[in-house]
Image 1 (cartoon, rainbow, N blue to C red):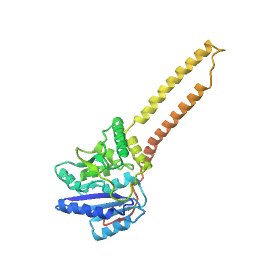
Image 2 (spheres, one colour):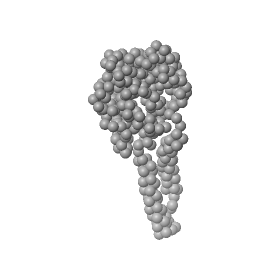
Image 3 (tube, rainbow, N blue to C red):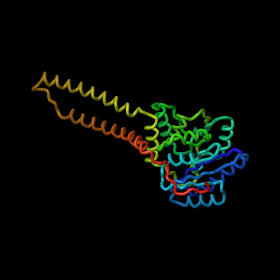
Image 4 (tube, one colour):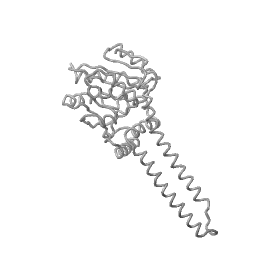
Length: 310
């Protein structure tokens, strides 16, 4: 009997974990009854009652498993580690807030049985904030324009991954994995299924500006070199421009030594323009260095505090 692994990352989801587990198990028993299953919750150090609820679920059903992290290791590392910890013939990653449709599980499995090693859900519309959806669309288009690999627009990681691809993920040993980019870069032929992202059922979103910025920079520094090249080309252009302006000023001063005023405006303008450009590109280069540093340190994806039913 084939086995399906369902991985659910959690962080302060006390209102969702129990109804979500019930919905997932009902979906599997109704439409995938000829498969064995495991349901893995990986918790990123929740501060509410999420962990106690998960413990209770694990006691009632030994096919429900739990990994409790010692700290919050971020929304990229924790789901990735959950996938690596799965033991099924295929693994499905799904969010804990009901924004990913549970009823798509059997659709994923059907396409997997048709031969696809990766089956993903791709948002075509969303009931989330319209501004956020528009900004995400703009970001994906910008990333695709400069990336060496075509990135998957409006893909959150929600999807099914064959055990052979999960093994590929294990062999990467990437301490800062960006699953969406890895699927686009290294994944075999995939099936994309469109869906409408629902509103969060309960609780508040854990995404804020800094978490979204971290994800954006992770993808940007992992799959593009355009930032560094822009810095190089901009520096080269302004160096030539500065040299030309300096020569023009020198010639004009030599021709009109006593009447040509040098003035402070060009000096101030140059200082502010070049200073701001330098700060911007130093910061951009710093983002690449941060990404490199994290990989060189090769720290573990997460540190486990407790595992249940493994």
